[in-house]
Length: 379
Ligand SMILES: [Zn+2]
Ligand SMILES: [Zn+2]
Image (tube, rainbow, N blue to C red; front, side):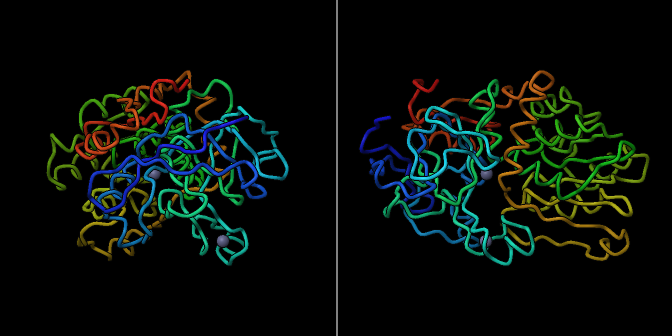
């Protein structure tokens, strides 16, 4: 398949400054390393981490070498292969024209990868959106017309019937929720679940928990349209942070909704700095708490003795590996009739309007906006 020599890309040269659209070189076919792929990015969705990568919040914790191409939640079509087998990471054949999701780079050779079996903790990990775009292979982020898939990146073919935008949202938001459910372990049908946050992470978690069949499913978050979607997807009750602006008020309501005992499993998916302390309060004795949404921000006080008194299990969850990408795609393929995942997808922006898209996301006017690097030419 022939393709152009340059690609448009949304580049962050300075944190917090307007994103620039630049033309970057597209690696030629003979330059692709063994196991590498070149992918045409059809849809890239915006994740909360993109906003915080742009504004510099993440920089303190995960340093990146600027300039970078923003975007790490995307899907695309294979246009060229480096030398090597033409199959995905679960052994399915892969051909030019196939739709694809791919992971960050995990080396598969370090203590974290091999002994801990926690590839997302890989000490040699390389992440799209946090890799310098002035050096080969240049196209190392989602908000660009093409992306270079590094040889060690896990990759999985998108099944037919999964829409591009939903597949894109599966590549960060949903695969992370799958990872969180993997970490929490089996949730029994008699257990109660509280989800903090009604953004894309929270909504996907509602769908997962509703599909699993839990006793009670309560969502704490806002604004109202997102809570309505959560209810449509199976939340038994919602607690609006707009209607109940204090932690005490929300705790009283959650207690009421959980027979005075609290939840067996709580998911922190809001990213609000105060949410962790509040989530500990929502837990019943012996509960499990998956913390996913926190990215940085100010220190907040926590009553650490609650962890002892409740004998709580706290589980941090970061990103995901290829198995979770595959499970995410299977989940949306299997449950697409039950949950209208496309209701989560809000405005569609061409690449040239990336600054507007980021600002709109930042102002919580969007649930999951899409960036179309090819404009409406995308399928
Ligand atoms: Zn993300
Ligand atoms: Zn590793």
